[in-house]
Image (cartoon, rainbow, N blue to C red; front, side, top):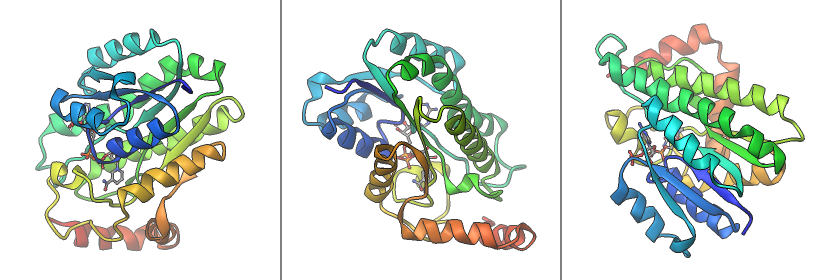
Length: 251
Ligand SMILES: NC(=O)c1ccc[n+]([C@@H]2O[C@H](COP(=O)([O-])OP(=O)(O)OC[C@H]3O[C@@H](n4cnc5c(N)ncnc54)[C@H](OP(=O)(O)O)[C@@H]3O)[C@@H](O)[C@H]2O)c1
């Protein structure tokens, strides 16, 4: 066994694939999510379910994040964290309820920062790793999913700055996928046909991030479609892109 890895969002699309790939690479998994039955399905899909553990908690609740930290601190062989849990809320900023929008910031940004900060001394001792599952939504403002874009922009900037600080000590991957067919869109409330352009399969997304990890970490935009989208984000000036996106994404 190569050691333990905390994987948040283990009951969802990318999470299930991360669990399978990391188990195949010889890691012991601490699978985190909110729903025991859904987490159990991830566990059942693994080859050696007895070697892994399930951890339940709500990442928008500070006390649950603190309890998770305390629980994971007790795992002597921890070598990695995959900050994968996340969700977005689709709709105009004014129309969406305040609490879910704040929860987006708590789950997608604050929880990864809290978990990583607390567990970093452990990861440094073993030249471990952190994979932060951000998004291309963090590269440019995202009308009608504004708090999600803000959370992922924060996650990307924090993750990339941390990667530079920890070079040679902890391997950091900042994963920035575009749209991919998981439960994410339905949960966000995105209407069919909006924002699903340039879709890339979850397998390609997860495999690309693990290849970047094997090369020592880095910023990872998976698949040629997402790289094309990323190039577009870089070359089209915001003054043109933003009104176009607002027109295209308007509910
Ligand atoms: N799919 C895409 O198009 C896409 C593109 C770019 C980035 N991403 C990012 O990829 C990551 C994984 O998402 P996915 O596409 O695999 O979506 P998903 O199938 O909806 O999975 C999301 C996972 O996050 C967990 N989660 C959500 N809210 C939580 C909370 N409050 N507390 C604890 N866990 C929570 C879910 O657990 P439950 O089972 O308890 O709900 C689930 O395991 C997210 O960070 C997302 O932002 C997705």
